[in-house]
Length: 279
Image (tube, rainbow, N blue to C red; front, side, top):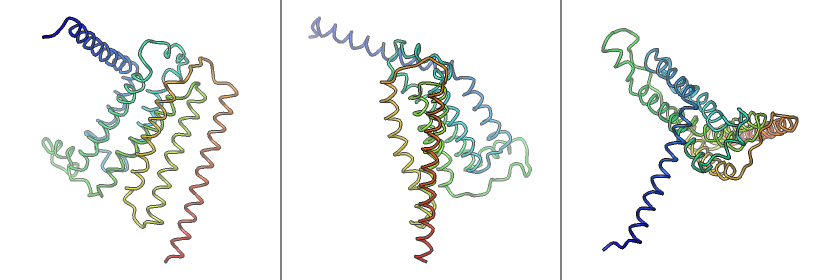
């Protein structure tokens, strides 16, 4: 027999659950309204290039499109309030920061992965040519050249991990100047990790399937997302234009990125020398 106290507790639990999902739906709807132009534009370009013009006939066009979309989604979805100078007001709104961070992450990463995975699978299995073959038969509908599957996997993993870096960097920035510097630093770190992993695979392990690189990027990207959520929950918003301090911060981040590239260039020279000596 259910007592009145237990019944009240169940009702309170159900009300709390409904309220939580209502907050998530509200934040998701708000983010969609704020960024639907960017998402719709990327989706329109993706439809035109993959299904109509078939410009993305291999992994390289998919990778380029994914990297551009990753920077655009990460910087815009996570840093919209910063670029508009309204984050101090945004952080004071009732939705918890953790919910806001996770909903933005799910929206941006979900759309990016959806476009990348569907586009890559369609290209690998010649689906656009099959659809065009229903209405026309010509050289336009010939199958694409066969490419190694690991390159297509990289076309999905590379942009997804870059989004993790740019999204976290944009989420923790407080001013417009810091946002630009953070996105630049995120791209430099992502490029350094990618270059370093490819270097180790080709020069030391004598293989180039990017398995080690993708594993390192996934691990580092997951750690960056966790750290970004932790810092976002504790940061204070500052509504002011980018000043001299932001320029100094941008210069510092640029120097750090250049230092990382120098380190990996030295590693490349070392790897090349080691390979020559071994041979």
